[in-house]
Length: 366
Length: 93
Image (cartoon, rainbow over all chains, first blue to last red; front, side, top):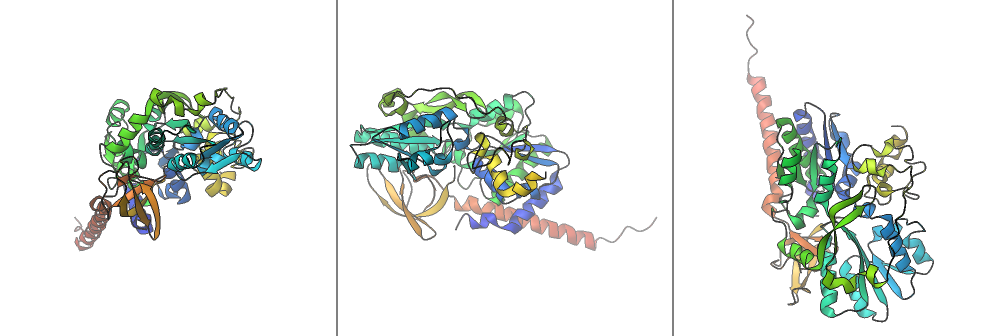
């Protein structure tokens, strides 16, 4: 496929890895904050091409993973309500709440449907006026324009039977929260390419300057990721802390203005709890007051009951780069993708789930 | 979750900015995609699609740059090697 295959060329990847090995003179730690990049790094073994001095840390880059347990429980409550059709992305259906997951609820008779796009849920609501259609919307800035458009389309059509359970999060505030943590281990960031396709990268220079970290906007294919790592390494070795754009074929400085405008019309910035990390100020999107009628939490008076996470889950430390997945005592034993203890194991893009899938044997004997 | 796939825009339909859409060809598989966030997309453009929505365009000139850089790096390495081979060993003192 054009624009994908050439960026998976093993010879190009090896050439970049060689150049990285040539440039590195001391230990460095680089964090990616995109589950797609985490998945690609582990799947293609890109970290194994790097010199031992370099450590890739896998940050909070998976929106499914960081969706709080309380929200999953709310989705389960809604799904079990008679007359409701609960729609979400496939990845959300397997994430266990306190009392089962959405797939099990579906097997037990709840009307839970996987949609490819939030806009499909709007169409479904228009086709089924006698049912209440709820879209469980999670995601980063990449997904926010589509969710925003669902709100705007539903409002334009005057749909009364459509609402959303929203758990949208924003990446730069989470990056800043990590950098502000005492003993922060991150020395450079690969910024998430598709988040920047939408938002641009004007938000990053103040972060790079304040915390003196290179930030390189990076794509998702092996050649992109290794090129992003090379640009980080060059900056680290030269003592620079700048924002660079590796993914210029789709990312521009200002991002996609029309998409940002859709987000701005539908949403406002709110505080948001990140599973495994806790509440981060101004790190989420919530519906604007004028769209309150589409807020499922309000419409169905859903309680926001705080839930405790299992004490032996160390996903917070994994998400902040203090711990590698296989260094957790529960990894692969009490915690597996079938029975996850917490955030980083619940979705295939979580660091623990990716290590479990591709590194199970080596992880058992680290 | 943030997976977005590039495909070529083949047709555009609809005048309402909220409902404007197009058919995008992903190596033979075509799909209807919202163009609400890419108002100036043209037929023939390669667009990046995420959850049914075109969120950006792919810039051909930028896409090939990395491969030009890799070629230069290769040529430089060859040149260095050739220079090394052609340089006579230093004469003993």
